[in-house]
Every structure is written in C-alpha cells, then in structure tokens.
Length: 215
Ligand code: GRF
Image 1 (cartoon, rainbow, N blue to C red):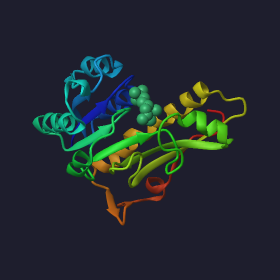
Image 2: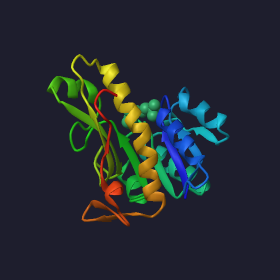
Image 3: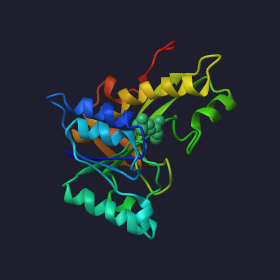
C-alpha cells in the first residue's frame, strides 16, 4: 500500500511510521510527505529517509477548496492509496474528506470521543482524569471524528505537567500509529455501521494497547 503522510510540524509520528515501514514485511511504504508549513521539522525527517517531501502552503491558495484540490492532485500524482495525517493542523474540506473516505487516517492525543480539538493535555489535567491516551481513526468531515481503529491508554500521574503528560502520550502514539497502519494496510479492517471490525482478530488484535503505569 502506497502511503502519503500529511504534516504541519515536528514530525515525530512521521518518524515512527518511517521506522515501521523499514521492516521488511511491513505492508505499506511511504511514497510522499506533504507539509502545509515550510518550517516543519518533518520535512527534513522525510528527506533524510529518502522520501520525497514537498511544501504546499495553504497561504498560496485563495480558498480551502483550492488548497485541498492541490493536495488531492499531488497525492494522486504520487500514486497514493492511503493518506495518514500526522500532526496535520489544517481542517480539510468535506470534498477532500469524501474523496479519501475510508482511505485516510488521523492520530489524536486523547481517548476519543473525549477531548476532541486542541490543548488536549491541558484539558485532561484540568478535568482530573486518571487515564488518557491516544486514538487512530478513519477521517470523517467532523474534526477528530470517525471510526476508531486503535487506542492506547496512558496513565495520568500525580504531579504531571502538560509537557510530561504530552511526552508520555506521544510515546504511546509512536507505538500505536504503526500498529494501526499495519492493520489497515493488511486489509484487516472493515467499517460496519461506522465501527471498525478487525478481521482475523485474536485477543491481541482487537485489544487496546495499554501503557503500564509509571512509563
Ligand atoms: C501529536 O500529538 C498528534 O497526535 C497531534 O499532533 C501531534 C503531532 O506531533 N495530532 P508530531 O508532529 O507527530 O511530532
């Protein structure tokens, strides 16, 4: 499966996907990386790994739809089968999302449907949650919504700061996204009534990924 990754920043999730795809039996390869920001750290990560990366700045387009059309055309030119959003901070138009329906994944640093949107870790701490986590899901037009493929649970530890919690969740993201991509690329996910069923599931495949307390 040919994967295109969309980024806007640091690119640590991109790096974890690149690492995973280096494994010989991994069923997907990253063929292009697109950033809407010229200063995204992920661009160098891609290029250092020998993956073509380009910047398509939303500022160069008169409308969201025009930007999305260029994104779509670029992904198609690269022969992309599946799009992975990895810290991509633009809202996509319904037309783009529909064109890639069931062929676009996103990672979000909370246990969806809780804590959609921005400033997740601040809000988790404010709410006094004992457990948080991250989610990989198929993309739907509403932000941070769509059938859930995999989740990892991460403890909130007394005395956590936003940064400490973000780091702990990020470490879980780096394990979760490659796992979810593998399931999709192996053709093991089916969406039924907007819920994901995993074919050939054994106890491990369907189970959430737990990160033990203290990590
Ligand atoms: C991650 O926390 C991801 O879940 C969120 O944005 C952050 C991106 O980090 N959507 P990185 O660019 O992958 O390092």
